[in-house]
Picture (spheres, rainbow, N blue to C red):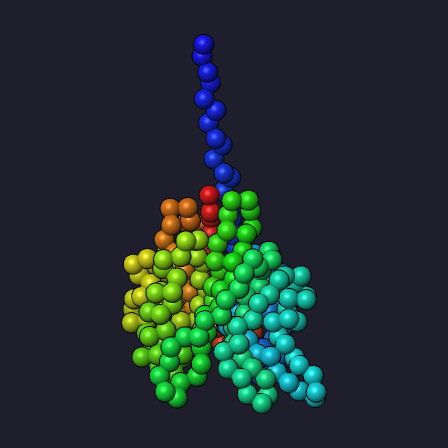
Length: 248
């Protein structure tokens, strides 16, 4: 009597397009609303996940102008907002947009020195395909203090490095790859732009990468490609960045 062993089929690779973008509090470099141009960029490149930094929810004329919700409504994406700081005029923080519903979300306060602005790490758990669940996180580090940036980068690595699920991280680090805050991500993370000299700050010089997309090192994850979107230079003082990441 003989029997045939049935081999299980390998799961088909899943490609995820991830964007990270500091939207400058919803104002372009002429201090006018940039939300229409942000929507153009999103519709042109069709990312599955978006990490937005410097997002505002403002109160004006008795109404709340919630930038993240406006973008979500226009794109049909799910969203979650991480409030970092609040004032009488509203709040500011970071946001995540996702093609898929969030299984769970979490906002974590980042450490800071006395007098520095509050910052947060925002994470959402998504399940884009059967058998694939991962965390997508977003942060904007303190731009005015190297010490705070380094402290916050080390804390984010500590919070995420032992994650059971794969992790993708979009971030305005405010630091170049040769500066201390970046060093927290050299060992355990894949930098989507590894080796790139394209600046992500549009007043910068080649090598002035301040914005990042990272993937936690995992044998089921790899970076397929990366680009800096440079054809909308007036939308913000940062360029949006885009990476295609493959899971299998």
